[in-house]
Image 1: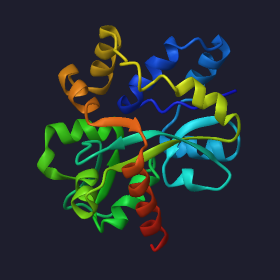
Image 2: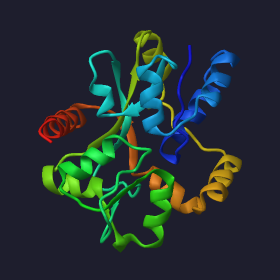
Image 3: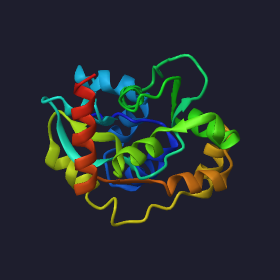
Image 4: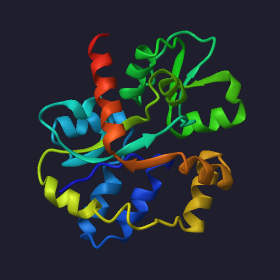
Length: 219
């Protein structure tokens, strides 16, 4: 059983939770080995190189996948999914959902996602369009950027993740310090960013995802 890992700050609480969860060591080692950006994990799951991952929400809509009500969500603002103003149209090769979202929202410019985007936004917020904020203004809904998808053993993954939202995951100081240094983002900004992110896909999130997929299908 191989779980793919997106090594972005927005999934840091999940990675810490899984480290503490009583999983076989082989599972944890495989998860570290199968790291990648969203677009890479989309491909890895499609070709069954991994068994499960949090993948781009637009990719998760494929009929072959079994999806949990768990993903990367934000409401009103996210700071890490951006379009750079006054630039030529360009996709972020790490992304799938965000590139399509920019087109749905008719935002022209360079798409940037992840920790790199967060770093840039914190330095010069007025230079970028926050696509989550733009989506909320249009729809009054949150946005689901990614969703937990698997090819099999859905019940097992659901069991593993069942206590995630019930337990408040505390990020150890040494890990927080490591991410702050490696990403060039101070610890206070990381904590503030994580308060924008949540993982439970409920009624509003499902409605938002359905609307996004419908609008994306028209492009």
